[in-house]
Length: 326
Image (cartoon, rainbow, N blue to C red; front, side):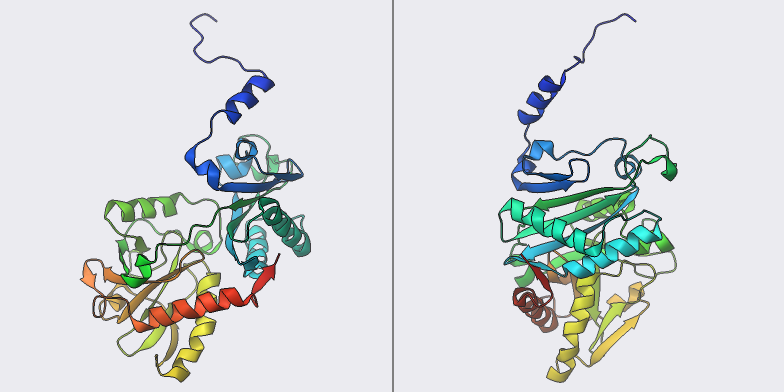
């Protein structure tokens, strides 16, 4: 073979030297990582690598969870580990780790990061072995636990609210929608559409007008009869934060702030008369939507239910009663 060589062949020392010399701005947020390939934890961002032949990488063949650590407590960690195990079982990924082992590995990785607040992400993959779509080519499952810096949302999103709209891109069907899988290309495209239109979030709508979820968030809304409405399961991820919001919201009926709680199949038209619309997720808790598809929501500003739920969630997180303490 002849021709000019434009890519040098590096030895291991040269390759490592290039990795160390090539940081990017996000590296400052990467605090610690456990890898089943290392069988240990690293704190140098340039070592936080995955094998390209891991099916998690080249096929999106894996499942994941993300939760946050606030004031040295990992919020809803046990529920996240329970859902991770359920997701893995749904797509036939062997999970060789017990709940206790995973829990301790998570806490050890956060301790290695030496922070009291962070985002914790777990990835359970099919593992390395060939570049085919055949899941049986893998040598065994892989586990990665990533700890990164937590940047709280800007206060303005709670005091001013955000814009949202509807996306009509193809909705993920059935199992793909219910399992927290790493096959996230459809979600990425929905987020891309939202950003292109100047929205903070886009809600998926299927061809029959049923509203699904956002790219990586859930939603709730207060209907014209003052019921707090949660979308029914089936075409959406069973969000753990929104589940906790539902538990906390039950007291709002006693306070007289809402008439009650409903769970139903939500249609696009349901949002036209909504008094409040809220986006719910791990990182933001509860954020009010003030403009939906160009239409003002309620009086055009954040409503009292969104504010009350935000305060309740923050108090719940700080109480540590639903957290795993470091």
